[in-house]
Length: 313
Image: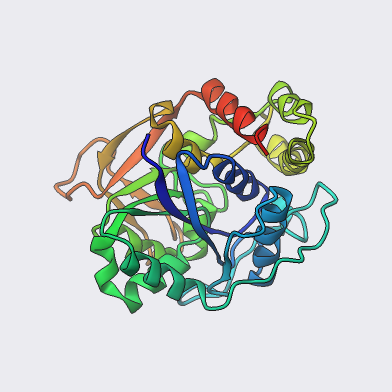
């Protein structure tokens, strides 16, 4: 497989942290050009802190971590400390980061990367609200045609929402940003709740992370144990969904996932369904397809991949 150049746009979050670790453990397939942070699960100062903690845990202090947008485009920030804890990375006892935040702003880094690299060679991997990506598209509309692909975690159709009855958290936090991204014309692959709710961290799967025996393996097990306390109670399941690593797993092993190329629109007007991903799964409208919306995952293969990759760090 040809190495894919990516930018990870993120709001860590324990599941974001696992996604970052798997990407950094996969240099043959993935070249992480930089990590851009956005406010989401927790405020920006904490997401930027957490991204650097994860890079240092992986032993990758040379990765550039940029601070981005600290609030949605046109509304107040909604955060998720009730899920991720007060730091966003509760669970393991990890040291404060010593590597610096990179000079410059995340949005400018995204724009510069897309302009400096050949068209169709940089993939954007948003794991949180889409504020940074939308702001870059607004500031530099020419970059849309240069994006190889946008592979994002967000939305839901058959599973509904996880922050409101209709909306998934990442899209709900900044629906106006999501609307801009889904209308930008770049190829989009969506990992919605319909997929991630099938990627459950059961006890056996978490034990496999811990049995790696390294600081990374133990930390990941502790992260997912903390993270799952909320979702197991909420869903009554045997484990918590591991959302964001689906994005990175798709880049490495796309045959783990199945979906359809359909039209996806974002609700930005109705307070009842604000942030809903209106997915035309059955093709009942004449709206043109704009995204590959995933629905199925080989969960055992997914967790085998994560365990093997995390063991490299």
